[in-house]
Image (cartoon, rainbow, N blue to C red):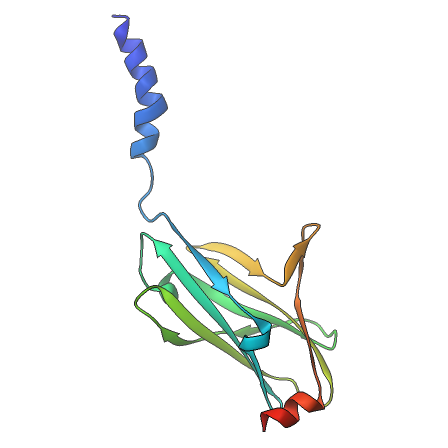
Length: 150
């Protein structure tokens, strides 16, 4: 009879946690390089973001990532949300999405961050985290960039 409490202790410690793991464990990441992924065309700016997933669950990034927004502030104005649109998706779990918005004329200081949900968990992505605060990406768009894009 002494074996029964030890068996229950072993079962609770090792076996139950092993079998209670949820299927669908996996992860995802985002890739963004402002030098390559931000394009200025006249008064329009196109921002590209790449998403990747791995592990179990859906093999399509467009199904696991949702609520994907670009949060943009022009010249210090109140931030606005710009929705991303799916551009391409590979069978290996990568997707490229783009957001397009108008910056008007003249010199513009563009600050932006990304918001998305991966498997229902909200995330924010910026240039870096400092003291717990998310710092945005910052770009200065002037006449030279617009002239080069024509």
